[in-house]
Structures are given as C-alpha cells and as structure tokens.
Amino acid sequence: MIVYPAIDLRNGVCVRLMHGRFDQVTEYDQVPAARLAAFAAEGATWIHVVDLDGAEAGKAMQHKLIGEMAGSLAVNIQSGGGVRTLMDVRNLLNAGVSRVVVGSQAVTEPAVVSAWLAKFGYDRLTLAFDVRVGEDGVPVPSLKGWTEAAGIDLWAALDRYPVGTLENVLITDVGRDGALTGPNLELLAEVMRRRPDLKVQASGGVSSLDDLKAARAIGCDGAIVGRAIYEGRFTARQAIEAVA
Image 1 (cartoon, rainbow, N blue to C red):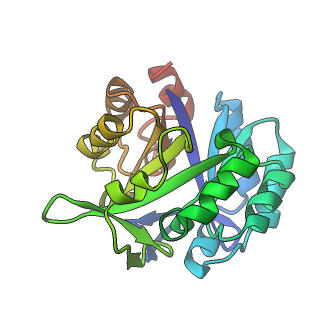
Image 2: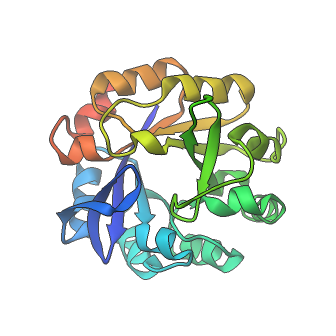
C-alpha cells in the first residue's frame, strides 16, 4: 500500500483543516518545499499536494507553486484543488505533477471528466469523492471545497464511471478529516466491495500506524496521511515501513 504524506497549501504555506472547515486552520510550515523534501528524504515515493485556496475558490490558485514543488525533486506528486477545466489538468501535468486529483467536477460533470480520463490516461487522474455520511448511513459527496452537498449519493456518482473507464479513486469521510479519529473502514470496504476494479485511496482520520495497517488489510491501494504526521504521532518513514 502506498502512503501519501499530505501537504495542504493555503496562502502559500502548509496547513491542515479540521473537518474540511476553512475557519478551523492549523498552520505548520512556511516553506512547503522544505516539507516536500523532508517527506522524500524519509522514503515517500508519492506525496499528496492540495491547493486549498483553489478548492475554496473553485479555480486554480496555487498551480505555479505546485509546479515549482514538482520540479524541485524526483518524487511523484498527486495534486488537486480547484481543478475545473481541461487546461487545469494539462497545466498541472505539464508542470510535472504525476497525477491530477479531480473533485467536484467528477460528480457534477462526469461526461467531461470521462473525456479527460480518456485523453490523458486512467493512470494520470484520481477522482476524489469527499463524502459526508448521513444519519441514514448514506454517503453523499460534498462539493466546492466541501461547502455543498451533491444531489446524488456516492454509489450513483461511481456508477457514472463504468468498469474500464476509471482506475484511481480517493475516498474521504469529511467528518473524520483532520480529526484523528481513524478512517471510515466500513465505507472504504463497501466501495471496494461494489467496485473491485478500482484502486482505492483512504483519506480522513488516520491517527496511528494501526489505522494504516487496517486500511491495507481491507485492500486499500493507498492512504493519505496528514495531521498524524504533523503532530508527531509517527513519521512518514514509520508509516511507509508499517505497510511495506
């Protein structure tokens, strides 16, 4: 299983949000490139970089910085946030990003995103489904920086991408993101049960090495790790070694 240490960018610095809320921000690094280099030095082969300003604004805001980061080291970067157009995808790939993350558009414009997948290659895009699980247990995607609920559930959203037209998905339980309460293993397992063709990345709530081992045990292809590393619960190297 691939461990993706996370770098979330806001106003050019590295931060983390609580439950995806832009009014609950913790700042960690003034120089994101230094954090990127540190993760690479600890053995990370993939790093997850998010343009939070872009996610909030609904348009690319920090792609220049992300491109500079991608060009600074021989490490794979998976990046998104505010990706809304074909040009956004192309710009990130041309800047050196290995895989582009598409969020809201994957739910609201599946035909457009399907065309991007066909054009750039299934291995060059990850579709991110950030969901809130209601009291009825139904996961509903959140859109536009997690500020709006989609009109369909996660299962309907995934059905718009038939087997053979999609490879990588990132599933975030927004209610657990940044909260260190453990990933939603039940949700992740259900995604893989329904769509065994997909490579699933777990996101939201990872708090311990045991959480990572549990994600690997149920079949996740990867896991995004943020606050737990920043707050010293374990290092990126320990996380990578735990699931090697």
